[in-house]
Length: 342
Image 1 (cartoon, helix red, strand yellow):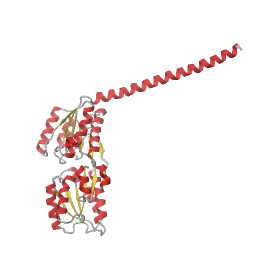
Image 2 (cartoon, helix red, strand yellow):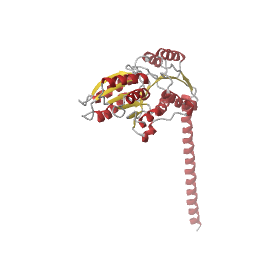
Image 3 (cartoon, rainbow, N blue to C red):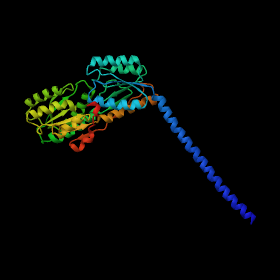
Image 4 (spheres, helix red, strand yellow):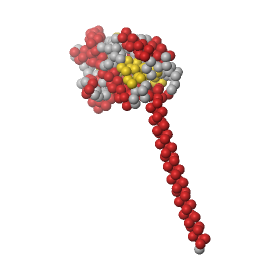
């Protein structure tokens, strides 16, 4: 009887001991995991806190202001310094600002190139000096540590396919006009190349005009008015940017050809782009939403700082997803401008 009692007690003590052991191990495991998470945050703070980010767009328009707003929100949260320069669409001033910032040696330089060559040397100089460089949406001939933005060639291909559906294979005259942004900008060069690849697959498509409007709505309107006079059977227009293409849309409307001449636009999802689609002034807009761009820019900056790679040794791309805006049901693919920016 005493033996049985001792055996039962031993079993109870053994089970209790095992339970205590499991509890202790579990507590230690939880503690170690918590310490690992704290260590991760500490490493993050060491990599980014106090770092200086310099940002030089081509100007501070609606698109660039949206990028700036999102970047600032992230960088402020993480204790980073954020310096912004606005050259107001003056290339010589932008070049001077970028050069001056490199001499001040920020940790990361973020730039938007007006064309493929202007900032090429300065981008290389920055990386040689140990500064990470992120290019946004319009690339230079000089690769940098990261590119964030649209794949312009793919953008052109997708837009051209939609236009061929409306104007190719005998469905229309086949006459197409392209209104470029800036003839020497990588965005325009790549977009045009991608579009032409598709247009050339349909013998009925004829590109009757391809002209740059320098991102200006008034110039786009003047170009469109002339093209309509010269080509009264024009079927479709490819506009490389929404705000610029608004001028072409007005010219089409004033000529009494709204709906007859189809205007396909590639743009960054500004609210007015959706308005233009809903009013029937744009046939459709292939959108790469600026708010998504802004998040990706911040991610690229933070990723580079945590990588500890030597600037200039790797080239990473963050390509923005594309969304068709064809009706009011697609409004979600145009961003909302905060009240303080209106």
